[in-house]
Length: 93
Image 1 (tube, rainbow, N blue to C red):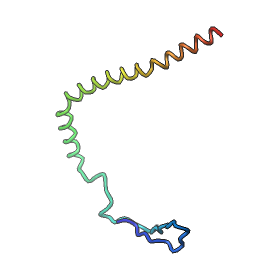
Image 2: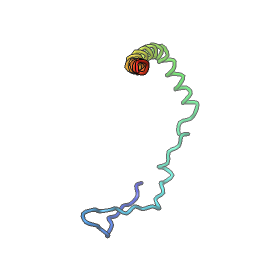
Image 3: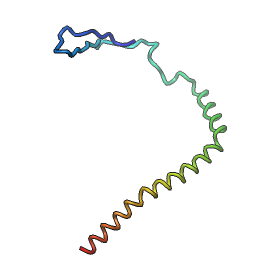
Image 4: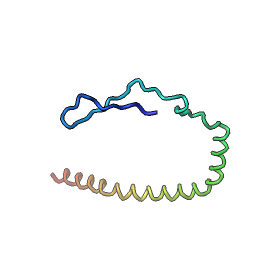
């Protein structure tokens, strides 16, 4: 249930500011709860998904770690080069 808005009678120029119902309260049926799914069903789902995706996740993890390492090395190269250049500049100056 959304709050009821009304157009304000105090209009300034072309701006229209809606009034908001600040005494809004949601109904009991609209409130969600984290206990909607029983814990034993969640455990069973986690077990099923870990068994089903176990081997695939390991392969994906290795590929992602390798890609992350390559991206990190390529990103760190200019920073290391800059530090080396600043060090040479300070020594020669």
